[in-house]
Image (cartoon, rainbow, N blue to C red; front, side, top):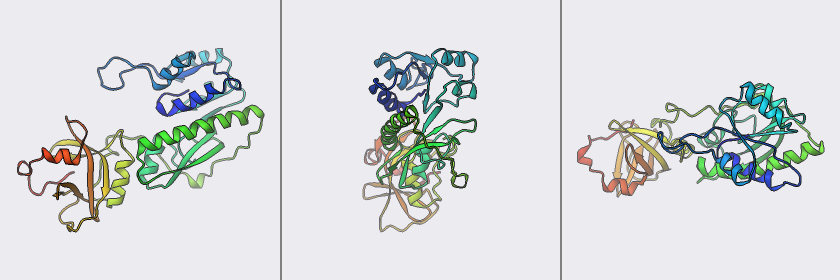
Length: 310
């Protein structure tokens, strides 16, 4: 059971070991417009992969419905594997006699919640990982089966890290299945004293706070790139920022955080304790562009002095 790109390597890995595992059903979300609001409906990445593999697919946007439970019961699964899907009710996950387990993109109990990859980078972690755990009623709290660490590199963003974790996760899913099938499962409880949260990303919590340290702003930006992207406001227009660096410049920081500086053909914004250099951005209604391209069309005399991002 899964929906986005993150779940696809796990599906393909299980399917590649057909001598050991028989996928009797793939569950995913329904077709819907995915690129633009009014575009034609498209299948989920998991549905696309399942179709390529010739696997049966069941689509649902309501895992709590009796019809869904009946559809799962009809295929008599031994094990249910979940990767980036909806919250399953006990009526579904208890249908599998060998259990239902989830692949989570963190080292649980760290970063429980909807956006573990993003928040690990935002919080400046240099190590994260993937965890498999048995489902229980409270989300992300089940007993841990296996874990695998993955380094967070300085140039990683949420997109690149998700790709690495999806590949590591696929290997962990296969290993977890082998452990369960052989009866060699040594689970352990999560340590409630080590819990941290990874809440759902919203318009409000993805806005850049320029009165933060420069290093944390850069982590914030890469932790949200390329989607949904950190954002700020430039003279009443929304601006998404995809790449930035903590800057080293001889120009002293003055004025309020968010003050814009164009210096030697480069774009800087003041933070609490220094400058952030903006490398890639997208102004509302425009395409994604490098800062140099943006500055070629930027006329300072059209904006107030000082210009401040908020």
